[in-house]
Image: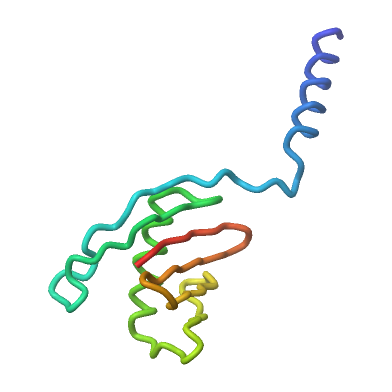
Length: 114
């Protein structure tokens, strides 16, 4: 009976320590080297990929696929590009010396630079 009380106490502490709305830790996933070999973008990497709520493998897949679609969209005058790719909502900030992208889906987030 005492052991059951300890287990219940530990479960209660765990529930308090990790509330339902807690965000997942952000992890750095490196870069995708030269995703556009043989094009005018040859040698330019997708860099500074970070993931929250997904694995690095998934984050790199999202960055590659969503960015490939972005290259086919005419840049808007505002410099802010918004579109969807494979259920992800993607926003690209084209202003500045490098393009910054954020993809979100059901509380998950992937960021990268081009």
